Image 1 (tube, rainbow, N blue to C red):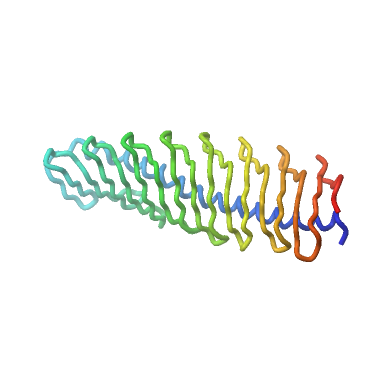
Image 2: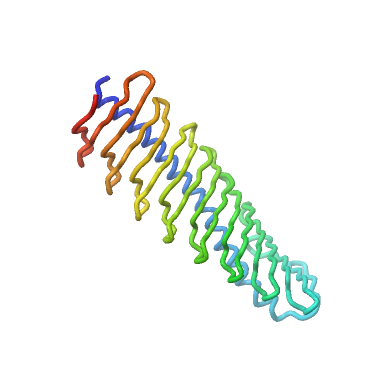
Length: 231
């Protein structure tokens, strides 16, 4: 196997790891969707609770009030599934527990009613999301059949860095402002490899070290062909 064939083989291994990452992001999207459902349920139930007086016990709704008559907890069953909401003394929801489409989820809200923490278990596995004060996802921790992953996003909600352990392939991935992978450090079965890509996602530089061959460095042109390599 010559130098170019060796680098092309390593590139295919890294592409496989990238595909696993894209599949995992779909599962993370399920956790993000849970917060949207929480808000939709609140929209349907909030008006009903605000106009009720006294203690209410129903087949589909159960309200708990404090000494001042303010609703502090609400248990309801909608078309989406059962849900439990907890409110502060100002009437803002601060926590929500819900089961919808066989997906249990928990959301914690700040004093402005913005979901800051979301935890859900989908068919792909559990996921945890932490949001900033604007409600943008900034940190995501997920566990899928392929393995655990940690995603870090910028203020626009675009994933800029991820640390993953997919199919026994640990990797660190860094992206640009559009979420396009720009650099990755992975340990594939041949050994560790550092790859840098251009704006189109084409690999341009690769540094690797394997057990059976000496370390190498390769540079690709915009046409994805190796233009220089060492040794």
